[in-house]
Image (cartoon, rainbow, N blue to C red; front, side, top):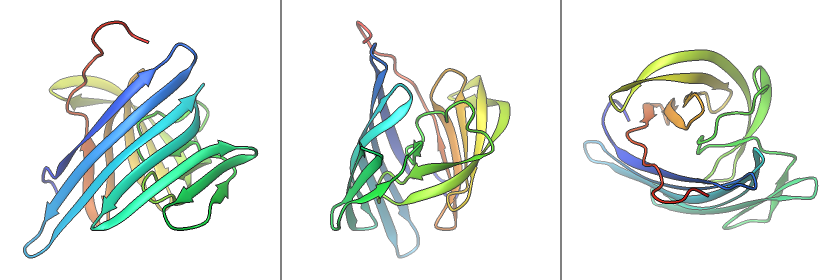
Length: 192
């Protein structure tokens, strides 16, 4: 944030032979200014099947405010429940703000619904594919598919071809913020 290393985020992605995917996301960010310190911490799990978002469970601390969220696919859409409040619904969700998964093919130039993984807000964003770009990630050159989400989120995303998110750039409360892949660890032993 603001050009300084402010924290770490870890994603564990497990893909199964039945087409399902399970993702655990953990992040901790601390930003200190002259007399003020801000802490953000997130822990969440997502389930996807055949490229479709199915459910999310998360808990977070955002500047001292505790949040929890549950979102599950139900008949006709999603049921979204926050720690304090009645369930709300959404017709569909194509992406979460964990941004671990590249948008589906054909999503370019249309509106998609993005679920904020910590507070449950829904954003209708226009997605624009920016083409392929070469980036240096963890000291290596990689070819990445670039996208821009335009709307309230206004975020740029780069996904390694056939791989994970490698870079994310946006403004967070007016501060330039970048998330960049630092390393990838492959599973040891038998893959599922």
